[in-house]
Every structure is written in C-alpha cells, then in structure tokens.
Image 1: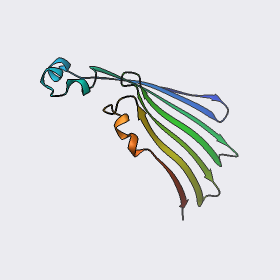
Image 2: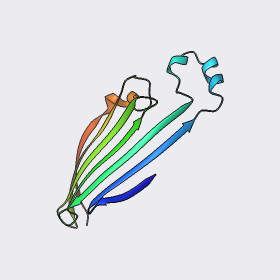
Image 3: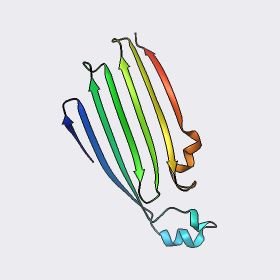
Length: 122
C-alpha cells in the first residue's frame, strides 16, 4: 500500500491485496457447488480519498474495496463535521454490490445502509 498528500488537505491511499487458496483443485473437486467456490487467486484493490477543510472542521472521505476477480465492491463514503471539541456530526453509508450473489462483498448487498451519528464528548 501507499499513501500520499496529493494536494494540501487532500490525501490519497492505495493498496493491492492478493489472497491465495492452497490446494484449490482439491476444494473444487470436493465441493458440492464448485461454481460458487472462490477463485484460486482473489485480488483486492483498496482506495481511500480524504479531504479536510475549514480548519479540519469538515472531513469528506471515500473508502473503496474492489475485487476484479470477484467483480464486487464495497464503498464507504463519510462526511464529518466537528462543531466544537465536544460536538460532532457524521453521515455515511456502507454500500455493497457485485455481479454474483455468492461473492465476498456481493453477499452483503441487502445489508447496505446509511447512517447519521451525533456525538458529544465530555
């Protein structure tokens, strides 16, 4: 992975992840549903874009996971507003999707959600 400040207050982070299944052929040969078993090599690309503004009172972030081998993804956009040292407000979403229902992220597609959080620290 690698992260850098592309512009002032704007950070970009990238990562590549490779997962390998040992004895993959044995898994396929012994599976009752070999068509839904994962590939021998699962590739995953992650990306985080973060912008901070207004003396760090506003933060906008997008965190993405994309698997080219599974053709599925998970997106996590977040907006945060820090009103003071005590009060903050955050809005975001967890969005899952993919082409086939049995892949890692696609299986959670029905669990996609949005949220709003108001926090008070004392």
